[in-house]
View 1 (cartoon, helix red, strand yellow):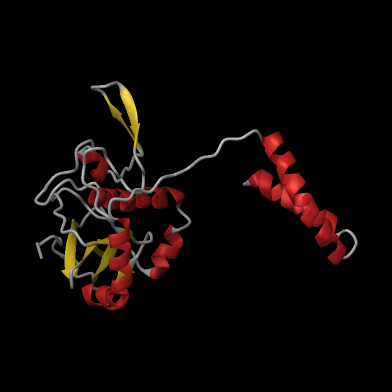
View 2: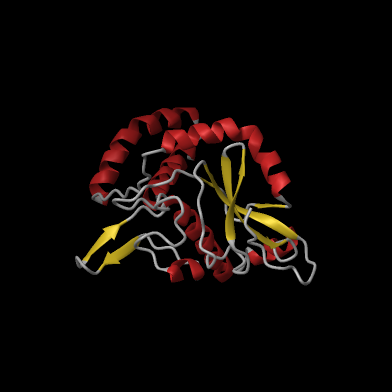
Length: 233
């Protein structure tokens, strides 16, 4: 394992922050810092499964400290972008032995923890939309990963793999299944009036049946609640 942990001069215990799992070995530039902006990102392997991690202070990221930080939306946004940027780096990794960010990404994107779903191509003067989660770029090899939740922290490498290896078969099956696949975000646009008319027509019969089973007034409230839910979502 490369020496990617800064010297702990204050003798503060270091833990492991985990970003994702993959079956593909990935090299990281020395300038790509982890969630704490101090320790570098690197990969550790166990039984053919690579965990993408970085070291961090267990004092700064203790349970009590995180409970307080979770009310700071600026802090959350900054760290969540860093978390996402590392995962996207892995997914858009172009080739073995690569020691820089993939084509189309600037180094500042990772240094600042920024992640963009749309990047501009100045040579063609057009915008090309990329999946924020899959990081699929035309003409590049996309690596399947199992992304982990924000702030997934382990005391050390052993506890990480002790937790994960019992689920190795499911993880490998998922990685194999998602090879050559892309995740898409879908938005549906519709005429609200027409949609609500059609929805109420189809819902009307079931509401009438429900009303026969409810106390007086409950059927009406159920219908209103259903309508509010549709308008909200």
